[in-house]
Image (cartoon, rainbow, N blue to C red):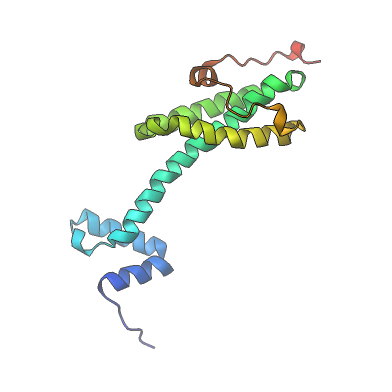
Length: 159
């Protein structure tokens, strides 16, 4: 059975809805060829916005994990581990990489810390069995402290 071939903007919309990969490759080809008048501008703009938001989400997520481990470190000193120390180092590197690759996110850094901290409180509470109210309602760490404070596991300090 022959299916009618759609043309123009309607075709791009249909392809976007049923074959995202094919649509994306087609949009890339059109852009590279300079055939801007043929692109699916509305959907392409939406996807580009989503790409930017994904970078913000990566920053916020790394901050949430980092902050949860700082909270656990400070509120359960007797449970500290080399794993917690390693996680703090890893998440600091992730935060630094996201910001280095996306300098435009610097302006949203404080927002990402605030949102990440809300998740961090819940995560720390779940992982420590401490009530969420035991943790400060607002992030207690300044940026420099969060990113550079020495976190060093010492096995002899654990009881």
